[in-house]
Image (cartoon, rainbow, N blue to C red; front, side, top):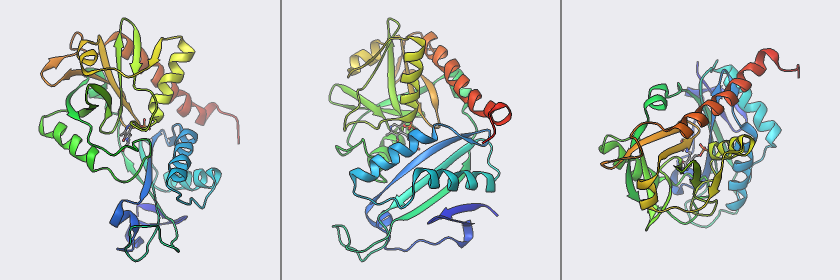
Length: 289
Ligand code: PDD
């Protein structure tokens, strides 16, 4: 039977139940993380947990586990479900209380985690995806990975209705991020991506890419760029836990660059794959723990 974690306990999925007055359900009062699993191993787990605690702090939400405890629980879940390639979804809500907007005097954090099998999107990584542009209508705390995702849902729905893989959002002239990804452009060999602020999520894949660029001495600017710069770019790609370094070859009706995944994007994909391989190789060659 498929397992999940409910408040620290590994149980069968059918045994789990959530109160209908859970604040996550009624107000979206909670946070989440999506962590990639390659070869049964958690990718960039520490960075995800750092962001989780940071989101929790910004919402005064209590996480009653240490990073070490959470890691052990998640690893047990991945093992229990025999997951090789997929994701772990973690969610923390402010718990159940009679419905009132302000924080309840007494409620206990509800923690749920489950796994899903999910293959790497190899075809799209090879050929790229198309995207649509859409106005960023979300609230002004996009740095918090909160359960309130309606703006993101509507943007992704627009992409789906247009046969596209992602919606690239903009506030006025400035491109912010995708509906569930960060956005990079490449111009004259230089990468540009929106700087960290309240207007974007501090993507873990974005962090990995910036780290790769530093190690490989690839020039990057964390600066805002406009819709015009996006259309004039040599290359564009999005980054996320599930889509990795994903080339964007067309936006609306316009090709980006040559209309094929660009050389810098390809190079980054190669370095990213090396990081994945290091993780899975550690199973056989890593030191005993
Ligand atoms: N989404 N920006 C937004 C709005 C996102 O929802 C995500 C991730 C990212 C990329 O972050 P990361 O590299 O840490 O995955 C950027 C996840 C995958 C999701 O909601 O499913």
